[in-house]
Length: 102
Image 1 (spheres, helix red, strand yellow):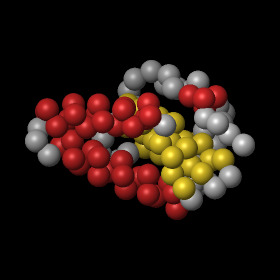
Image 2 (cartoon, one colour; image 1 turned 180 degrees about the horizontal axis):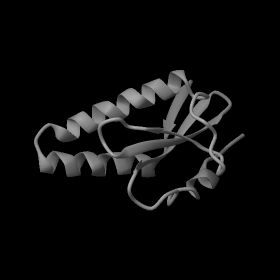
Image 3 (tube, one colour; image 1 turned 45 degrees about the horizontal axis):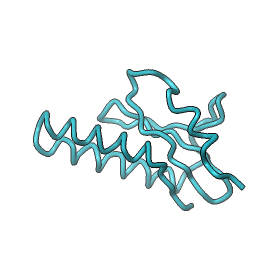
Image 4 (tube, helix red, strand yellow; image 1 turned 60 degrees about the vertical axis):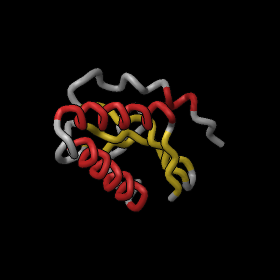
């Protein structure tokens, strides 16, 4: 599967990495690595996480309180959010409409 990350999700990850890196050197890199590993897993297993009522799937990171929300269209996995688990749920849901889908 091809992975596409919307700009907002990329920015969310960068902001989180910067935050953790300021807390402790190397911690941001660990977050980046964990997110990268989960994105790779999603690319290989996109249909495994359950489809949520709003029409997306989600995987939770194990160490950091973040999740990766995505949708699958044809052979593309669109990462639409990398959200903090303890903040506003589905604040990003409107991003689904901004993806140019066939």
